[in-house]
Length: 142
Length: 143
Image 1 (cartoon, chains in turn brown, cyan):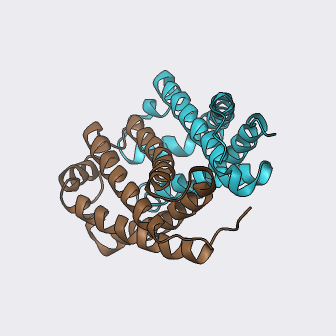
Image 2: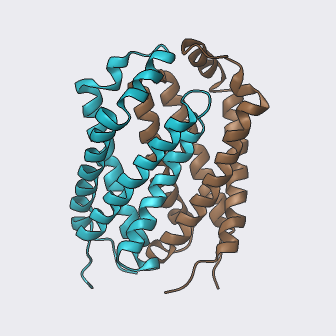
């Protein structure tokens, strides 16, 4: 069977990661800002820590790594479902489910409030699917 | 390209979920129980939420969903990499890596780094075991 085009996986992944970072930055500063600060204060932590460079940088790196993983998943599933947006949505949603399950676990442990969980999950869905589709658009095989 | 054998994905996913549940039970009640209780105390969380019936039910449902996602992923990438343990391992990593990346975002400030690494090792071992189980069950007509 055909080999994956790994240079295109990396390129597409970095683009997808950039898209996810932009979306996460926007949602983090708007939709999630107030709930996020209140949750940190509730847990006895500095409510502004995720607004500092030290607090933001790990998530920036995570988004780029996730972008590469999303395009890898797309490329891996491409022979099964064909090239295109539908396959990018399938592969993206599959990885999104794994992340949401972790977030749900945090909710049941009391680390998140229900409102923050719902908002975070919806924002993550948009970011992951946008990252997957945009990254997959750059992926090609010979 | 052949269709996914949904009739085999479901039992493969359920078996994978059972494997994940077994590892999580060991981890949450024995291996890392004390560490998570410490985190609960440090962060003003109710330690009872870390265990108990509610947590067990949540864990069972979560593990079933992850098991199904893992089985579906294995089936989806099978045309690319072929049937077998190698593909099962790739599927396991595809499900494991997003989870450990998310947890890494909380390491250092919410949970200690050593707990993050030990939890990640447990997650990886359980995901590989679940992946191999799913790959063992899943088959297609052409096989």
